[in-house]
Image (cartoon, rainbow, N blue to C red):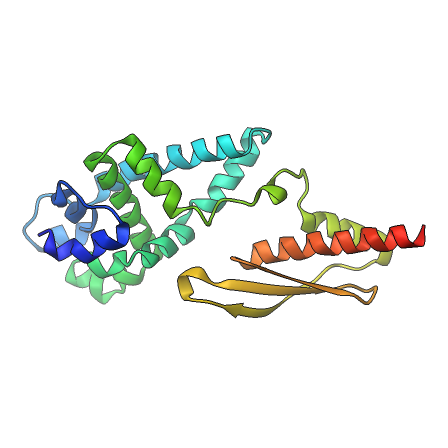
Length: 234
């Protein structure tokens, strides 16, 4: 059975001592309904959800000591949701190894975000049971390292995009617009470049790992440019 999941374990960068835990994590209830078997992945999904929440919550708590509970919750929900979990599951090639019933397979279950997101949580639960708290923590933090918010955005009470909008509406009756001008790189590690054009005649561009982060950076650069223009007039 270990050979069956050998490539996946290489991708996970984790070797299971009890490989049956990984097999259970990848077994959907539809498969058990149509084949002989004893357990599907819903219990491991339940555990993995809790493992993920504690590790992400602790890391956010440490990274942002001045952020209130509501802000930390907002950060966590932005990182841990069906879309992001499904994206990470695809990056790890988890859908390829799912054991699905024939009906679920024909209905596109292998590509359904909710199903593959649940499978990733089940794999996290399996790693936790197969190892220990610190090993699972290391795995989660490595997996989510690109999804943690950037500090310069987080420490502000208002985001740079909000500040820029307030500034331009007050001075120019202008609502900022950001245009995506380029995206490059492999599917799992894309770089997005956006442009903001000022009614004052200048433009700024910024590149980041997501459109949202690129827009925040462009807004930050635009505010800095506006401040320098104001100083020049003083």
